[in-house]
Length: 81
Image 1 (cartoon, rainbow, N blue to C red):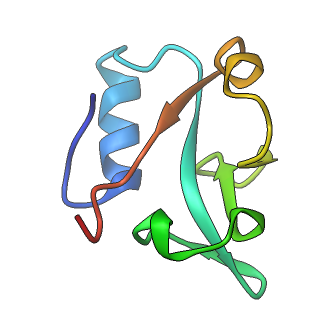
Image 2 (image 1 turned 60 degrees about the vertical axis):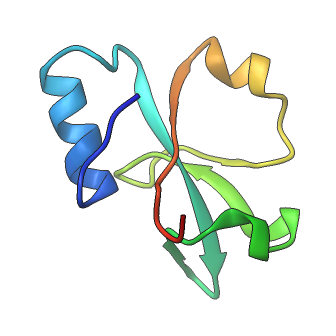
């Protein structure tokens, strides 16, 4: 588990401390053409994506978690909780 005031900062620090050893994917909400971090339960599955901090890697929430875990570390924000 990683935590911080900002999910991007938390991921960066966790990478520097080697808590994250793979490319992180952050659970994000697609709104128009941009992504944000909100409480996921308020959105439909087609709006929820796993996005890397640099947005180079994007996977829909509907992808199998087990296949994602082979290549990525999954991160969730506490925003809205």
